[in-house]
Structure formats: structure tokens, C-alpha cells
Image 1 (cartoon, rainbow, N blue to C red):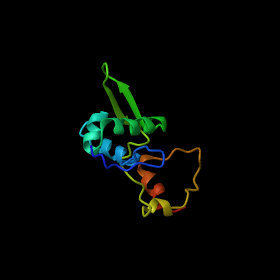
Image 2 (tube, helix red, strand yellow):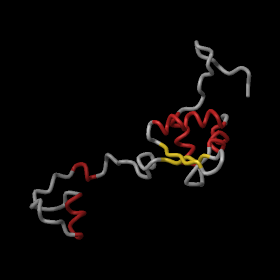
Image 3 (tube, one colour):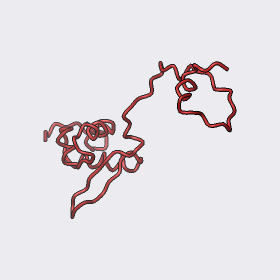
Length: 122
């Protein structure tokens, strides 16, 4: 590690990776779990720096962890962080008006798309 790392007013090293960097690195791993050492290698930082970020993410409820050996800890994304699809604001669903049908009557499987995308004539 370079001796020229930047320090803040309190003499502490300035962080070079963000929490989002760590989350993205977890998403990019080939495994459903990651270790701080693996993430440190991916992020070009120390495993301790990665571990500190992981602890913060765990406190925020964004990652989970499990001790799997004497000193081995694996980390993974929580369900709320493990998103595979983003919301498309251009989806016609958002322009559709609410269905004015009987709320107690279940919707048939054949009618779901029509109701979701506003193609039903009332």
C-alpha cells in the first residue's frame, strides 16, 4: 500500500471505496456469497477495508453474513438489495387507469394483462 494515501483532519485514512462499490462487487461475483478478501481483491483495497464496508452494510440491513469456519465469514445481498429488474417508467402499466370492476371478484388469468395494461373496456 502506498504511504501517500490521503488522510482527513483527524489523521484517519480517507476511504477510497463506497458502499455502492462493495454492493456492485458482490453482484459481480460468480458465487451467491463473497468474502471480504475476495471483495478486497475485486475492489483493489485491503480485505479489512472491504470488511469494514460490509459491516456498515450489514448494520443497514443491506447484506447478510454467516460465519462458516473459525475465521471465515461469507456475505450476501439481502432480498431488498438483490434486484434483478429495474422499474421502467415508460411501461404502459403506469398510464393505465384502475379497473372499476367488482373488488371481491377474482380476476381470471386470461384478463390479467388486459387489466394491468388498461385494455379493458368498462
